[in-house]
Length: 207
Image (cartoon, rainbow, N blue to C red; front, side):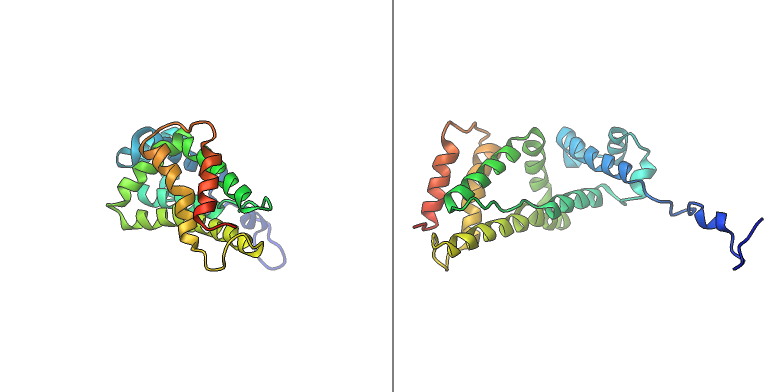
């Protein structure tokens, strides 16, 4: 076998490492997508690695090489959603920013997968501290950063007082929509988001 001047084998250097083989990104993404579909179809309690693998078109080994359990798989997917985040709107006014956030949130919550997955995961979180923390990051902490940015800009423009409560702003932005779309599961009447945006900005003390 030919070797270079250093005594190493160039072909061996190019060979794919045995054991810890390179994880194909397309398979990883297929598995992550399958998690959302499986959660929406059967819920966390009935979800299985076998079902995820079948839906993703891969073997169970491909899943277990990346995550050691369905909990860790869901934790990773939820954390990835949180990391992606939601850009804070900058329309030039608090009312405009709030209206845009409400529009984006309402579309997300009305998505068939979200309407099935979020309530199910919140119920499961009561039995799993790890999942509860991941959901807190995905559904609260990341959104609090967006609310903080919107509030900070409104303070700079003189629309809000400097001591406005950012967490209250987040509650006002997300609470009504969550209640209406995921708890009561009622449609949003015409003009609802405009009226809600006006109520939120007024409740925050906008001038």
